Length: 333
Image (cartoon, rainbow, N blue to C red):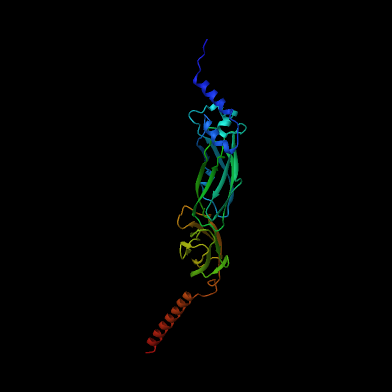
């Protein structure tokens, strides 16, 4: 009984014939390639997965580590049977070497802005057991450190490159994958409030001026919003300006104006200072509180005649003298 030879049988026979061609010197390599019935020459793909950790702004001076995941695969030619992958026959066709395992070396590099220091834990990784479909990624680490002088909302790009360089005999083409991530410097609000003395003697019923200094030690132009948290009853307290703009490293003088009632011993007021980025008020720092004790200097205490009272008394005395003089004149005219 005659058996028909099917197309798959012919392909397998031809593949077996190609495996009988031994590895030879480089001088005969081209002749062997011409004899090869199945020539595996295909594209490869290197992919770097998205890094979510780089989506949020990063504070100056901050240092952290994040995963970098790399995947590798090749495109399976239409006429290449997938069941041959990983077999000696498949290895011969793909790599010209029956004993070659399914592993590929990927070279890694990274670029960054000058205010950001980056380093990959490994400059080379090996992907094993790869195939024409993506498998679990190979993971390495990326270390990132921002310089302390980085200014708020500066943008820069971190570029990671993964390169596969195919060895000369392999039937795989070289390929390269890149991932570019924009990183942003976060706002570091840092202000310093200075006052000569937190207990201040003031004159009742008069406007007293209390000086304060505000310094911007942060990494961006800052607007400091001032607020008086509590005002004693019938007192008048205000700042000479409610918002103070400060360049990086700048110090400015502001003034607290206080007018009290006549009789009091000591009152404590609470002031609040809120730093925010001048160019974007969504970036704010924590509220800084300052308490000041306001003490009566005793200038209007009982037993001491103030100017107003003295004038009234003098006017009364003058009126009495004037009335007495008028009566005296009328009586002796």
